[in-house]
Picture 1 (tube, rainbow, N blue to C red):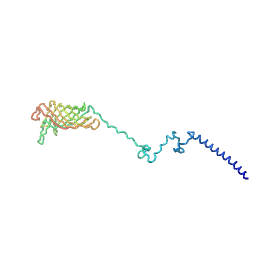
Picture 2: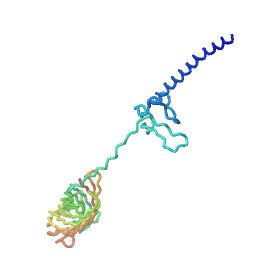
Picture 3: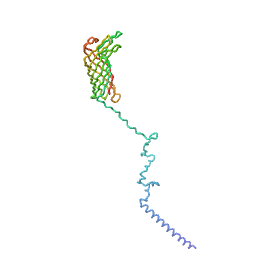
Length: 290
């Protein structure tokens, strides 16, 4: 009986040893190709294996992913998002156009000129005693002149004005009137204020000729005659300030003085020297150009 149990034990251990040897051989056969193939090899020792679902390195999907944030405490710059193109209120900001440069109007070389002058001075051209017993007089240098012409600017420093006008001083009564009238033709060369296209200060000297001076007096009991004097020549000085109001339109204000003497046949009501009259005067004027 004893020998029978021992024989059974030896038969049962032989198959177990054979199965163990086959398992060791199979494990080595599987492990050897995995270590030799780079595609099947895992990450090197000491490196973290890629997480599940991560694309392999070098693939387009991997390059499109954002880089990982730096760990806490790191000094590396962090990726920032681009500025929001939408402005306050949920609307896109508007780029305002650049402010255009102001339009500068180039000065004209010539402009139409007009002027209204009030001048005072000179001898008495006519003297009439009124009903109150006082004497009224017409001055040879007065009173009102209306003129028009052209203002030429040949350069930035000079200007020339040439005008023709009508100048008159008068007395009016219920029974008649008296007046002294003439036609002034003037030419003045002026020095202009530098740096201005139009307007500004200008001061000048010039000459004048008073054409067809006529003294008329038709006051009953005082005078009833008409005297034509000779054409007279004189000199003018003026200072003007002009300012532009719109494009080539502007206004002038200024002062002027005239030196002139009239001569001709005597008139009963003329003063001490009937052979000449001093028509020198001074005054102010307003005008404009366009």
